[in-house]
Image (cartoon, rainbow, N blue to C red; front, side):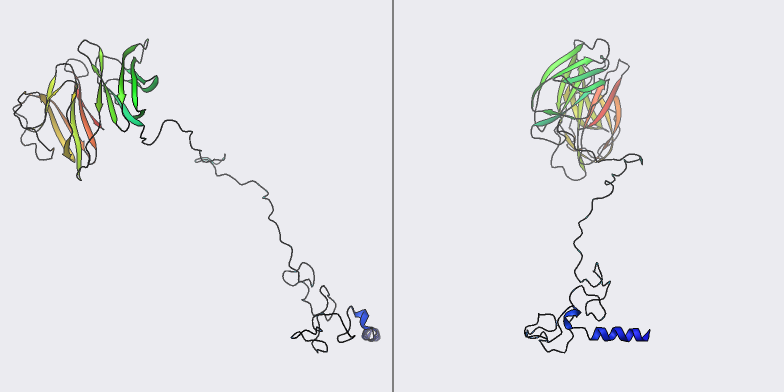
Amino acid sequence: MADNDMHYNRIYSQAPASETGRPAPGSGSNPPAYPGNSSSPGTGGSGSNSPAPDAPGSDRPGSNNPPSGSPGSDRPGDPTPPPEQKPSAPSQPPQLPDAPGSSSRPWMPPYPAWPGYPTVPSQNYGQVRFLNASTGSSSVNVSIDGSSYFAGAGFASLSAYDWISDGFHTVTIRSASGLRSILLQQTFPFLAGQKVTLVLTDAADGSLDLVRVVDTGCSNLPSNSACFRFANMTWPGSYFDLMLGNEMVFRNISYQSVSSYKQAIAGNYQFTVVAASGYAFIRELPLIILGAEGVSVTAHESILIFSAAIAAGNDYTAYLIGNTWSTAGLQILLAQD
């Protein structure tokens, strides 16, 4: 074995320079420029004793190339970086989250609804609501220009505000049962930016009537204050006063009339409805405030006593509705405008 090794080493050392894969360093007049034998300054020109690296890709013993398996190499001794890898498509489509409360079906966020009636205040729209204060009618349906606004409205029913465009509109009241015949039909003006309550009342001739009440409240209120007013929607020919203890708050409010708003300090109040005195000299409270009620009502006949919780920053209307001879009786409906 030792003889064979010596034989191969001798053959290798005697091999011509051309058989080693490159010219011997410093041989020839114009040898090829390899790293280590270049004549350029600073590169260890010809005649340099620095060993020159083998040609790229060489992996034979004695090679000065990076060792096989060097980082970033895709084959032994190759310093070339691997080609850029393009991202591959996902093997599965992205999974949508499950619907809330469900783990079996995917859920997608709802798309915005197609525009219809405005859901925010608009310069071309006002607001309207409906109150049924009639004791002589059964439940009714209310429509405006053929569009339903309030259905199955019984006595003392109050709807929420709904949007209505600026201009004149026809309001139709129909019976909610039976033949659904038209009970009343009237045309009213509606203004942009204005709130209105339409009150259905009993007329003197036994028919029905609609009263248009504008719900424009106070503005620039002091802190801890609200607005309060009183409305008589009972029967034709009636007049009432509203008292706070022995102090007059609103005087001589006639049928289908609404008082002006007054500033009220936030708090819980107990008001008394009495028959109108008719005395014009009785002073009214300029401001509704707790502690101003004084003594209990003694000089006036009490018809109805009610409590009202008044919160700061709100507008309120106390509607007196019904009568004293029907099963409905007299009652107060306190509405926030």
